Length: 182
Image 1 (cartoon, one colour):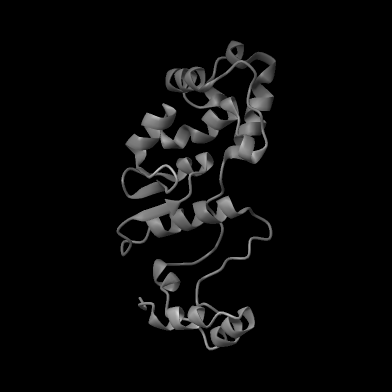
Image 2 (cartoon, rainbow, N blue to C red):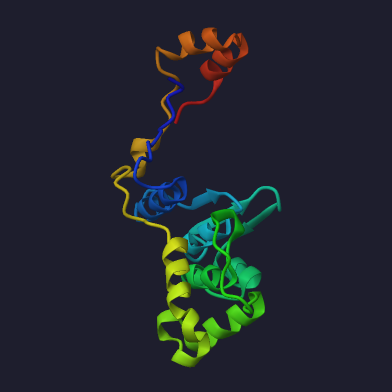
C-alpha cells in the first residue's frame, strides 16, 4: 500500500534478495551507484569497486572494495571463503577451529579460494570449510526485477489511506502524500 517494492522470499533468504538486487542494479547503466545498507559481513561479497558499496550506518562507514580489503584483509570475492574459515555467528556457523581473522586473510591471499588450498592446510576440516563457504555464499540469481526503473517510487497506492487509518496514524498518510515521487 505504501508503494514500495516488496519481494516475498519464500525459497531464499533476505540476504540473497539484497545480493540479487545489487547484482541486477549494478548491470543497469541508468544506475550510478548501488548502496547496500547493512553492516552484515556476508554482504561485503557483493561490493564491486566503488560502484556497489556497503553502507554501515551504525559504524558510520561506506565500504567500497578498498574498504572491504581494509576491514577483512581480502578482496570482496573472497568474503565467503573468509567467513567459512573464521565463522559468522549471525548466520550460525562457527568457522574452522584455530583459524582467526589474520590467519584466514593470510591463507586466502596466499592460496586463493578454499578449493585451491593445499590438502595439508585444512586437513580433515576441508569438507567442513566448503560447507561453511556454501552457507556464506549469497545467491545473485533471484528474478526480482529486470531493470531499476521498476523500483522507482511512484507514491502511495489508493489502499494506503486505509492502512494509515487502521494503524491510527494520520501523520503517516500526510507524510506519504508529501514525499517526493521519483
